[in-house]
Amino acid sequence: MPKIVDHEQQRYELSATVAEVVAEQGLENTTLRNVAAAHGCTKGMVQHYFADKEQLLLGALEFVEEMYEARMEAATEGLDGLDFLAASLQAQLPLKPEIEQEWRVRLAFNTRAAISPDMREVLSGRYSAQLKTGLACLKQAEKARKLQKGVNLRNAYRSLLALVYGLGVGAVMDPKLFPAAAQRQILATAIDGLRR
Image 1 (cartoon, helix red, strand yellow):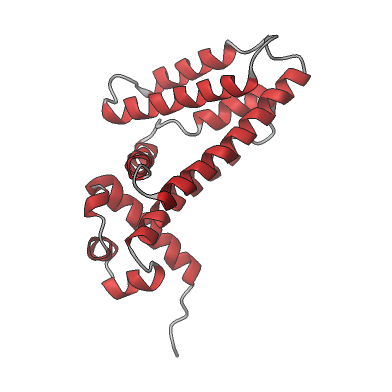
Image 2: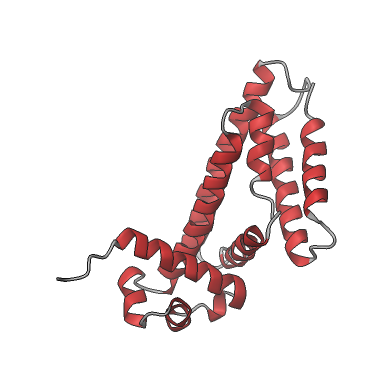
């Protein structure tokens, strides 16, 4: 009897392996061969799911974004307004080793986006979706009179996102400079500064 293969699960597991290789070896060393070796399969199997290196790399990016989205959904359940925004942004912070690995992958892709239109388009789409969600949270807080008067919503969200990105980069580069407790506190202070 032939073995039944769940292709979606197999692609997901390969994407997780690609993310590990990117985080540990960098984009330049993320090859079909290295991914196959790390996953314990043939190069042909990797090519079955990813036609070329660009698709391979996009698989890793999709994987880390799915991990964030799952964490964010769990962290924000039942929340709205500024509380939702705070929880969703905190879910991005590299507070644990596995999230630090996600950040290494993100940093690699942000660098690649400068030369890859496909990567730039994917990252731009993700930013646009985040901006839409962030603005909705701030509007909700404004309507509920829980936001300081006169706040420019777009700039407030951009500032928070820049803060999270800065904390993420800093924590990955030097974890002692931005330990988990400091990351949480810095973000909480910024959110509290918006509260009425």
